[in-house]
Length: 173
Image 1 (cartoon, rainbow, N blue to C red):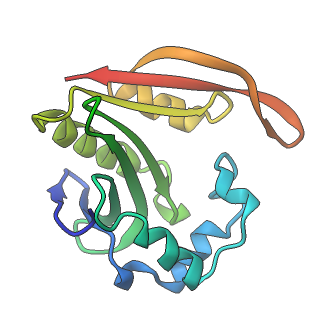
Image 2: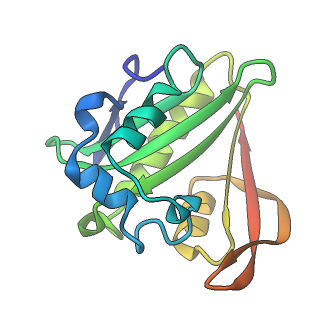
Image 3: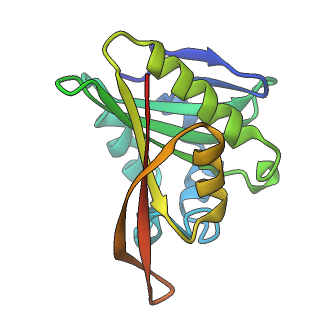
């Protein structure tokens, strides 16, 4: 499911990600070591075809792949929501790929807008997310959105050769 959603926040708009969103800038974000520093995307090299293949996985599914744009239409990132219909949950993630928009509240606005919308859906009772504990910006975003720390997977992944914890957050409707 990609094109059915259109959400407006204070700074951003969230729309279903489409093939037209697979631009050189988007592919560049996925290949930028700083952008994907805390993501497992850092282990892959992306191109237009790999992006099309990923987008196709959302076709005919309950999951969402969203484009994050400023209110004046500048594409700055993406969000995903993997929904478990049977459990009434959605696990979400975000990437602000355009580093010019880091630290400006755009990610927080996108996150808060998406969570609020998801928790208004009758089929969703809980939203979850996880990040590496060393990703301080993401931890702050999660906590500012009202999500609560639910668990820690100690030393789960390596960043720069050092074991890092994954912290797991949740928020109920």
